[in-house]
Length: 363
Image 1: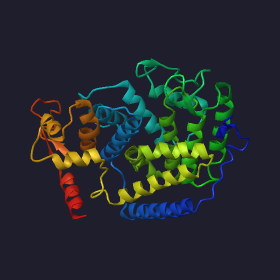
Image 2 (image 1 turned 30 degrees about the horizontal axis):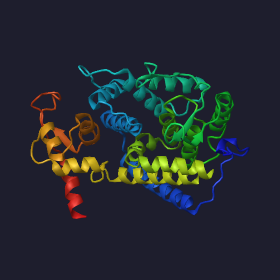
Image 3 (image 1 turned 180 degrees about the vertical axis):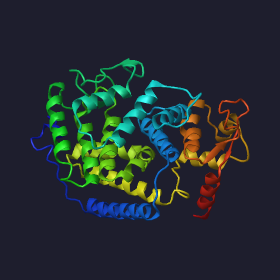
Image 4 (image 1 turned 90 degrees about the vertical axis):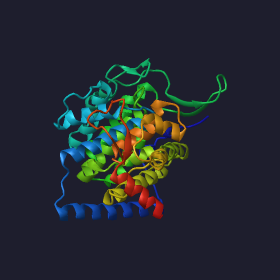
């Protein structure tokens, strides 16, 4: 009979001996120190508009990891309101407002003690309608008694890859988790704590839905507490670009009862994020889809022209995977930005997009 990681008496006494982790940890510390020194030496502070762009990108990417496409204009509207920026005439969406509120709470109030009540508040904000897609779920409370399993295979021949702790164990498991969090802030490196917290929380899987998103919030909160710079470093965007490796690292660590694989993956993501933050003008977040869009865009082109040139028929996928990410990081721009929904709207390369293509051509 399969014994899952959480069934072992020592499962929360995480241990690792991995030279790759030590090497990655050292590199992350070095890069973080360089970035902090550069910011301090130049007296850099993030203006509200810059914070807004970073938070917008993080909101889009954390939803995209879960397969959810958000409207970028609505995200920007919500972020603007939360940061006190002008947002007149922009649309409102309760789901997006909730996600933005939770991300801000995790970064702005990272010193606030964590409790069940705060967790329930986060979860309720992520699902303000009480539904996940078409399905009604338990919101702001632990999941029900039905087993939480990850399965594959046809009906009648399902293979159970993982089963989370039973519902009656959740209060105890979360109690241990919150105790570790609130009592051991200074006992472990922030980079390691962020990876362990995410792995631990996802293993418990306390909610019916949103566990992955909630788990990544722990990473955001811990890194922001460890060093405030990390509140403005888009680690989430890199996780979106490497989401297959993200899920593979989670699964492999679970199967091998060793969190070292997941820790190593997360350290790599942090290392990449910090590196890119030091040279933002030449290293924007570019997925293969966005790269294809940039290479296709010649002069001013409409959405229909771009879709036809790329060979993509689904407008929703085009907007979510190509158009919105390119606009979000400033690689392309609208020809009529004051009327984003105009039927005459076209798109063209921005200066950053041209610079990125130029650099790409030199490699």
